Amino acid sequence: MGLSMYCERVSIQAEHVNMEGALWLPEAHIGVVLFAAEAGNAKAPPNDYISSVLRSAHIGTLWLDLPAAWLKKKANIDVGVLTLWLDAACNWLREYGATSELPIGLSCTGKGTAAALQVAATRGKDIAMIVVRGGRPDLAGHGTLSRITAPTLLIAGGLDEDALGMNRSAYVALRCEKRFEVIPGATHNFDDPGSPEVVARLARGWFLQHVYAAYL
Image (cartoon, rainbow, N blue to C red; front, side, top):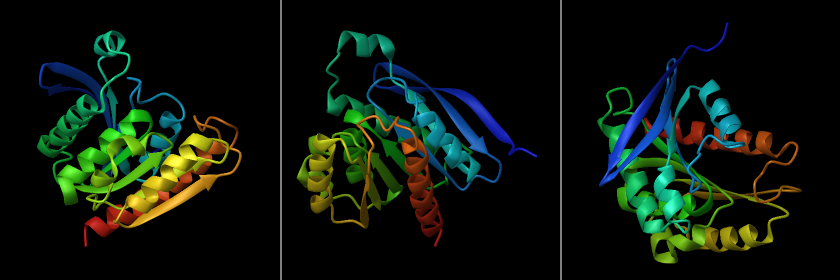
């Protein structure tokens, strides 16, 4: 028998921008993860596979679709704007009945990484765990990284030299519980054969470990 799942299309207001998203909550859910990306399509591969693995472990997911019209007009989206949007999404999760008491995790890529890390630094213990997949943690700034308290897992592809360097630097700057994993043979998008499965396994383990710790 398959896992019972509740899905709802949601609308989140951030200043003058309206964001659409999809909230998926499996039965007996124990936490929720916000997927943060810069491309406006958080459910693109391999995010859709990773989130399905999390839901099978009773962790809910919120896919946030950033406003397409805004992104088209401003191709080089500002990290500060992304930070405001992601913070608004976290506020929404705290105000929504089914997620208001749940530990919140962040799964981020691209410039969404820097935005999510800034949100985590500001919200402190309200963020229970973070998984960074490649991305641009350098854009968050070392001062921001040193203030993060949420346990943070950094994942980089072994063939993505730029991400390797940026994530190694971020790892040194972090003062929270942390871990750095390199996936041999993986490229920037982690869409190589076998890579999504490895990322999903690492993310599931990290989120489960710290979801349960948040209840202690």
